[in-house]
Image (cartoon, rainbow, N blue to C red):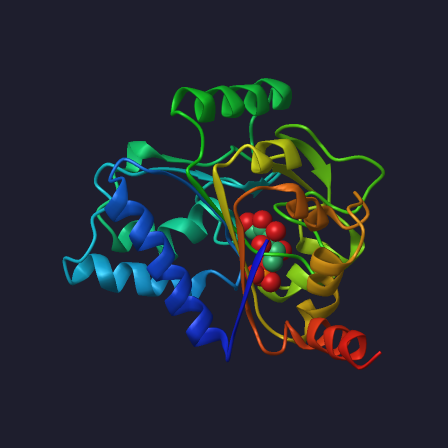
Length: 251
Ligand code: F6R
């Protein structure tokens, strides 16, 4: 696990965009795993700018998003489908038919999840998976639990996740209680993984991810087992990590 500590959100966003751009330049038909939430917004803005400047093209890129709220139509302003169009897809030259998101309104949930896994396989697997991290250590919507989920599935969102995401909704009760999410297994099958974290409220999750035991109670800790993971974090998200490292080196 490679941990890169940068000064702030803007630096993390710029570096993340550079890493994704390098992937796309090396392999124009890359399969990208994409995340939503506040964290990747800056990265997407940088990618949109690079695309606009003609530095990179997404014409051959295929994308799969990590998750979607159950019950929200793609046109809903808080759906992840809507978020991706607003923040990235409408600003780059990716082909709409090459972008994939789980449907939050699928009637047959199991079928939707199985079809998603099969589609990723048919695309050749994910080359680079972008991740954020929840304050509770979740990746995608794999919440702390007793076992790692092997594949795409329906999840009940944690109280903390609903509270964290309430900022996007009028009221906390409006946050959907469930989501469809790629599993830990789906994420671990990606050839490389880039996790972004910024801000103090991610510090504990980052410490547990990097320095804690591998446990489904901290879903992101599983990344310790992946052969090609980069964590791009800012000084605040790294603050407890550094504290522990300093304490160790002073011992
Ligand atoms: C979103 C996702 C989530 C977020 C996480 C952090 O697709 O999978 O795991 O990455 O909840 O969200 P932000 O970036 O809003 O702090």
